Image (cartoon, helix red, strand yellow):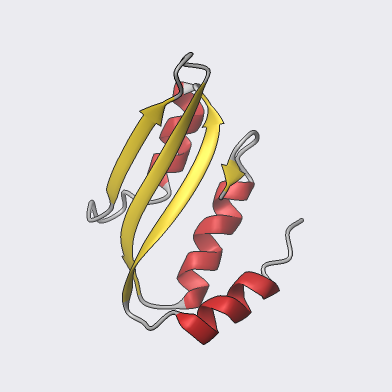
Length: 90
């Protein structure tokens, strides 16, 4: 289980809200896991999602830009993403 208190404190200190926030993830090139990460953001279809494959195609990086209103929204997305096996949060 992750302790998000340090991230929460930094965001509360430095991030004004509402804000466009950038999430970054790295994971194996597994279509099911990629879809799971994308599903964290596509409720209202306002997220800008960019997926880039590594040179050898074994990994992908996913960058998501989404408007958020609170620190709790950011932490909630990170908590859900961390529950997906093999997803590394940057």
